[in-house]
Amino acid sequence: QVQLQESGPGLVKPSETLSLTCTVSGGSVSSGSYYWSWIRQPPGKGLEWIGYIYYSGSTNYNPSLKSRVTISVDTSKNQFSLKLSSVTAADTAVYYCARVPYCSSTSCPYGMDVWGQGTTVTVSS
Amino acid sequence: DIQMTQSPSSLSASVGDRVTITCRASQSISSYLNWYQQKPGKAPKLLIYAASSLQSGVPSRFSGSGSGTDFTLTISSLQPEDFATYYCQQSYSTPGTFGPGTKVDIK
Image (cartoon, rainbow over all chains, first blue to last red; front, side, top):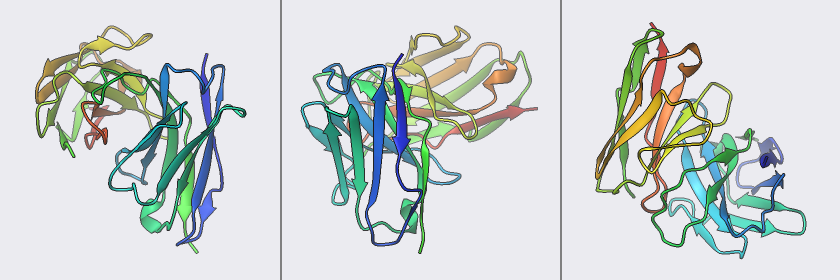
C-alpha cells in the first residue's frame, strides 16, 4: 500500500524559500502511472492545487504561483520536493503531497487518490 | 481558471438523513469532477472521481452525478462518520481548482 510522508521546516522567515519533501513508500515515484502533486490549505480555508511532476521531470504549476514554485523529483531517493520562494504570511498553510493517476491529456478523469498526512508551515519572523 | 462553487456552504443533518451537496463550474468541465471528504486535522480523502465513479473502498451510500457545469454528491443515509467537510474539484484543466467546501455537521 502506497504511503506518502511530507517533511521539512515548520517555520520559514518572510522572503525566504520554503522547502518540503514527500517520501513515497510502498511504491515507486518512477512509476509512469502517476503524477506527484502538491496541494496546500491555509488555516481555516479551502484547498489550493500547487502543481505536479511526472517521473520524467515534466511539471505543471498553478499560474498564480508559477513564478515562485519549483517541483522536482529524486528517483534515487523515491522522493519529490517543493520549493516556494519569496514567501509571505499568505503562504502559511498545511502542505499536502498526493498522487494522481497519469493520463495523456490535460483533462484527467482521475482524482488525487493517495495523500500524505500534511505538514504545517508557518511564515513568520 | 475555472471557478467552482458549492451549495450549501454548510448544513445540519441527522444520522439516517439523505444529504445532497451541489457543485457548479464556471464553464463546462464534461465529467471531470472529483469529490473529497475532509475531517478536522486530516488529509482529504477521494470519494468520487469522474463525476460518478466510486473510489475503491468508499461506501456505496456515497454517489455522484452530473456533467457539464452542474454536479451533485449524495449521501443516501448519513452515518456518524460522515460528518465532515466535502470539496469538489475539477480535473478538466489546470489548475485543478477546488470548490470552497460544504461542512456537514450534526443537527
